[in-house]
Amino acid sequence: MAEAFRTMKHKKNLEYSKTVEGIGPPFDGGTLGSFIDSIPDPVYYKGTDGRYGGCNTAYAQLLGKPKETIIGATDFDLFPKRFADKLLQWDLQLLTLRERQVFESSFPAADGTELRVLCHLNVLFSPNGEVAYVVGSIIDVTAERKEEQERSEAMAMAAAAETAVQTIEGMIDPVIILNAAGTVERVNRGYAELFGLGRPVMGRHISTLFVGIPEEESVGLLKRCVAQGRIRDLEAKIVDVHGNELPVLVNISLLRDSQRAIDGFVVAVRDISSLVQATAQLRENERKLDAILNASEDAIMLVDRGGTIKAANRALAERYNLAPNDLTGRNFADLPDRGLSEIRTHFLDTIVNSGKPFRLEYEHSPWVFYNSGFPIFSSQGTVDEIAIFSYDITERKQGERLQRALYSISEAAYFARDTSNLFRIVHKIIGRLLPADHFLLVLQDGASGQLKCPYYSQGGSELPEGQARSWAL
Image (cartoon, rainbow, N blue to C red; front, side):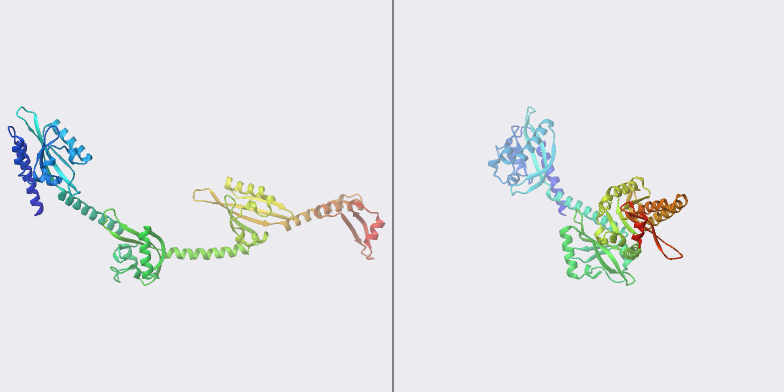
């Protein structure tokens, strides 16, 4: 009804405007002033010099000024400069085109409010065909524009709400929509499939949905979500459709679109029961692997491509009199036997650059170690880590040397010219295995049991046989 009345009113005002525009000479200013005062909407007329020649009572009330103040003044005397500049531009355009113009703009009212108005402008000509007056009528369309905006916002809000609902319904993970008070407004299909709808859920508080989250804590979570915007990866439990407690990760976010169609929270729930089981299995496998690695007498470590130790077993820690955790974070090249730093760096660089296993034997007196390095590749195909197995081969090396010494002694016994020369060769061979500055060779007669000392060397000098015999006795 109100809309129909406003439409009739605007049509009537337009009729007034057309009537004023149709008045021609010899219609003087006084007659024009009397006529426009009967029009309910604000109407004014100005001379070509921009000064007001008259206005009706409605226009004076709109400006909050008496007619005597308005008549003879310009727009720059009555309005802020910003709006006066706009009126000047309209007048100039009207005087150029000399035909009716309609402009929509905000209008500063006397009470300080901003109205939305339609300004209908036209010219009145003098008898000689020159422009005599600029006539303007103002129609207040503030209410209409506000209703249009509200309708537009309502449609946008409805569309936003529908989009949000469709998005939530299409999600695989269970989703719960809460209002600002924390009670359930809606759940999606994913929630119904996993947790069932046998128990009423609508209208329940969030604290009743999850196991182990009291109401005070859940209220605190929602307050924290309002302050921070979201809460991520909250661990909780929820009862599924079969009555089993499932471990879940909960993410809570503010649900507030730009049109404020929805004001509350969206709670996304992810079932992590399979992940928890896999994690437990992985930890069990890691425990078993640690037991296997620590049972090995060989030193084992895992390093990144830069040589930083990420894991080490017991044998490696015992080699350096450290705990396994004390080795983690150290660099392979900087282990206590620092003299091998360059060798270790070369060892790692060779594996990283070639992408192939590499083996290296080195001696660190009195030990001999054999290292095997195996590259571990990343998903991009680059060497990401290196598994190193270090074997102590000191005893094996000593056995090989002893075997070579015995073989050399056998050859010497075959090629020696006499026993004295043989004893000297034996001394040299044994001296390669052990420090032998003082070397005494004692022989026992099998029949009599008598001991003889045919060869004795002290400080590299051989002693006479008689003196050597006295040493033996």
